[in-house]
Image (cartoon, rainbow, N blue to C red; front, side):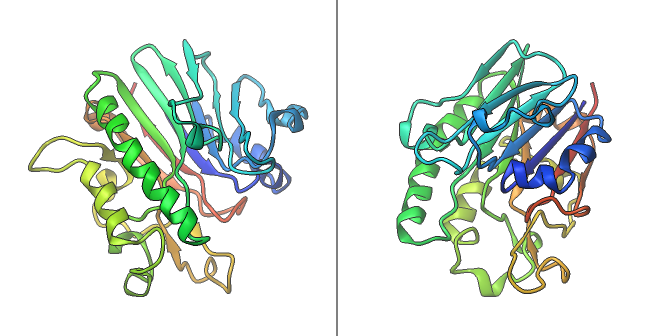
Amino acid sequence: MRIISFNANGIRSAANKGFFDWLRQQDADVTCLQETKAQEDQLLDPMFRPDGHHCFYKDASTKKGYSGVAIYSRREPDEVRTALGWAPFDDEGRYVEARFGNLSVVSFYIPSGSSGDIRQGFKFEVMDWLRPILDEWLNSGRDYVLCGDWNIVRSALDIKNWKSNQKNSGCLPAERDWLNGMCFDQDRRSGWVDTYRELNAQGQDYTWWSNRGAARANDVGWRIDYQFVTPSLRDRLVRCAIAASPRFSDHAPYRVDYRD
């Protein structure tokens, strides 16, 4: 089973840069998109319904051309969910879940706080509200794959300029403590498994680069796009890859292969 997660920073922009041609070559079973920046009625071109895929979009209802998530799946899901029960989050188009038997694949887009104090405050609200939901999923007995842009790095291995970003959204100690507090711990033997870190214990690859300067050319990046899985899937991890090129967005697609 192959799953891809990708923040498109505008699905129409990514399409114009060849994303769907690239996707056809990946043989992915499920593809999770974030930041589609489009309403579904703007995506009538067949390219937005890749051949052989079931396609599900959750748009932002608060503002057009904002946020938005999607899932493409070769297999038809048993159920698709698009709301978690809190309008401020749901209405921004930040969650869609496809269920296949005991497996749930989620496309998440966690808010950024980089635009200022108001959005950083909302990000902290989302984190506090989301934690018990994630704990419930972790203990539910279902297999979960949580894909998406979480807008938080975990450690110095996940960001090029660690020291200079300590006071910047996405690298704040409280954000990192929240994310790391949910991740798998060898002592506790529980928590969400960070697939990249499980497969690359000392890896220093990034999934996002600022558009300022020559950040991408110099690989001055952040790893903020993840596939977190329940421990039940840990032994099924085979390999992963971050497709830094070709460039479709300021983010790179992140691919994970799982044993069936």
